[in-house]
Length: 502
Image (cartoon, rainbow, N blue to C red):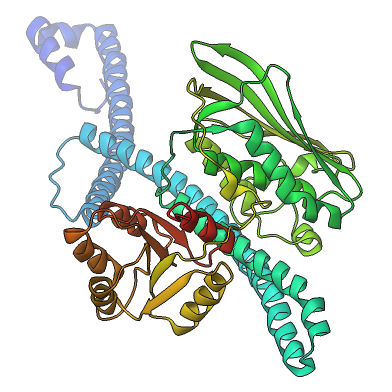
């Protein structure tokens, strides 16, 4: 045998089964044992090599796993830190599932914030557009107010300088027209303000719609003729005219539509049409149309003409005038009346604005006298009527006195409510005209005091306070009715006429 040491496992087997004598007498056995020993040794060396290689691989994998665990722990700690900063709370997160749930929550929060940011940008754009529209509206409003004021101030100066009857006669119509435009403009602004504040109440009183339509056409004839237009009213033969609703607001709606038609039509025709649709169970369903042959409206502007502070185009307001409030007020009033404004239009051919109403029929035909809406009302002489005018503004007092002197009314004046009570106690009057806002004692307190002893004397509020709250309070304390300043002398004549005994 060679001098190479035997493998331990092989040596133990030889010692167990083979004797020394056998090995010494049989060299072929020793040769076999040597070859087997070499195989054992080779196999062991191979196993050692493989074992060493596997250990290195396992060590590398363990190192990568350790690094991954460290990264995960770092991410875990960083995530908790970020969430803690967002929530201002101490978080105790233990499991991977909780981390996954928090990540899902964060993803949803990020998406919500992204959507919110988009909405914020959209709102910002809308707000900027609204500010631009308001700025344009204020510019238009300034122009609309300053134009008639410029005419009034300039013509008064000219009349003072010329100081002649001819100058007076030439300029009085222009002054009247300018003042009327200014009055209508302020009315639109006040109406818009009241509607926006939800302070418009709809009355339910009997009236004749056919008569109302003819009165509106009559009152608009002069303005229509300035543009060489004609106005006509077309009523269905079977139309039921006696209805119950709010004639003042319906008048306002139709007047706004006719006014627009007149403004945007030249050498054309404006029609007010009353069309009967159905009559059932003492209710009338009908359609009101206002058509014109004017400039029409571009289809791209259909959605904007009913928006506040808007006209179809800026150049439209510059060319034709107006504030852009008319259709806004019309739309809101019709909504209060339970209807909706609609229209059809074609550029260059005209427009048709219309709405449908469903109103109870006035079976008693008790329609109120709407002559206060009629420009053709003839003022009555009221000679002998005794009026106490309670007014603190000296100019307003003089104007009212001069107006009533045309009707031969006997006017006594008081500069505040306290003086008014004193004069009422000392004299006899047929009517009291009472301003509401005055120093020392206002019209509310004065009226309340007078009503303690006299429930019958007519008291008419002559006031610039057009707010619904003020007027409602006035009626509650005993005011019979009211006239809003600046007032129409014909309206004052009509209301004083109610209490005149010849």
